[in-house]
Image 1 (cartoon, rainbow, N blue to C red):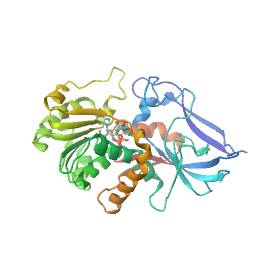
Image 2: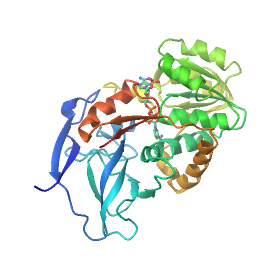
Image 3: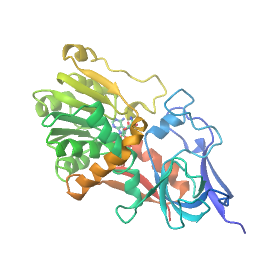
Image 4: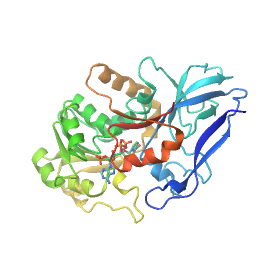
Length: 335
Ligand SMILES: NC(=O)c1ccc[n+]([C@@H]2O[C@H](COP(=O)([O-])OP(=O)(O)OC[C@H]3O[C@@H](n4cnc5c(N)ncnc54)[C@H](OP(=O)(O)O)[C@@H]3O)[C@@H](O)[C@H]2O)c1
């Protein structure tokens, strides 16, 4: 019997939270690589909040995933057969290969990674897209200066853990905002943040007054909504508000809730700027090298949340992001 490739495809556009019936689980025959291409077996799949946005049929920085298409996802695959000059069986390759067990690629947009230096999952996390997001968001968009006060929301997640630790490596005072005592204890204990605010249990405005008494110089926002508003109310002069994401709004069936405290940008002569990490692709190599250096020195600790399962577990694993069940980078590791 020919080998099969299990895939997760988009069956319907969700309204609000994604439901199991929005996905189709399908098995198709495994393809041969053919001339100039390689075939690979998926090892780990990245789960990202942005995936929710890719399911909506509205203009964005990437086209939506089409109905019936394999769900878009970053992953690391191990090459099993190749007619491509740059790839050999046994090589590990990171790319946007989708939620499926087997892939065939001509190598465009793909990059070989060294699993002797770091496990495959880390190329989807600290040394991958989330790490790049933290690095360029904080240092370029946030124009971080040594010794400033930095507040990071979604601080216990893939981007947040790296952003906060980069700010610490730059000698900043860092306050993280995250959900639950366990995540907050990890931020101030293991990761060396100066303070952590549990937004589920505490009044964020009050806590920011206490932990950022002189105001926030850089606010790195991963969540939007009420937490963004609370941070806007506490800006220092010439503050930078980095709009990285707004996960609190992604499942809204109603329009996104915008900030009401935006006039504090005027009063504080501050700037609020969004960015898309892909715009920095040409400089990923330099950023990855610097982050790898910090990891080597123990200044950046890698936090990964590895779920072991099959591609059929993708829909349920994706929901963990929206329930706050992950600590650090969430990945699905296949057998
Ligand atoms: N601009 C870019 O180029 C770019 C690139 C990558 C990622 N992003 C954005 O960066 C953000 C973080 O992504 P990530 O991959 O690092 O995910 P992540 O932080 O690892 O996971 C999502 C976390 O968001 C928190 N969360 C969920 N619902 C929330 C809510 N209603 N209010 C507040 N917090 C909530 C949860 O933590 P708690 O338990 O703390 O609630 C959850 O663990 C996302 O907004 C994403 O879209 C942007």
